[in-house]
Length: 182
Image (cartoon, helix red, strand yellow):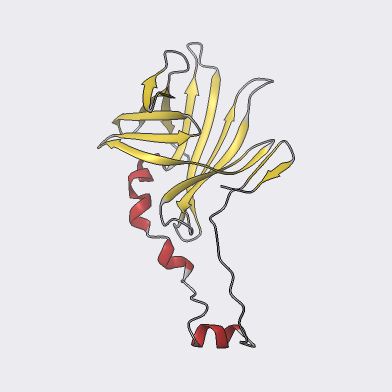
């Protein structure tokens, strides 16, 4: 996981080995199988994003007075190879950011990258907890979204404690799907 936080770059990548070659071109390396190129599209099966499809669209959280607290949009990019989430919390201190989900080319697993005010990097993954329940894991927390129907999700946070996720009592909310006028 390579990250930039507070302007500091931290590299945490896989261990690689280097080998000297006398090949003179990339074509020569490929021909002699010293360089194996995967097609990026082969590493991005849409089927791995399938559980996240129910998130597509515009979602909103409002307080009891009808004031907006959270605005969230999910949409595909890159020929449906990436699911992008943009979010903004209301208020002067409200945070905003972008999450991108897709297949990590190093691991072949569905992963989550995040871009925020002071941070960019791979930060998590997705858990399909049940037919209508998704878990968005970020660091030591998991945002659990339960879908009672296609236009609602109930969300609450869990904290990783002694190797298991435990429900937190604060921070729960209900998001409603916003019908877009065309």
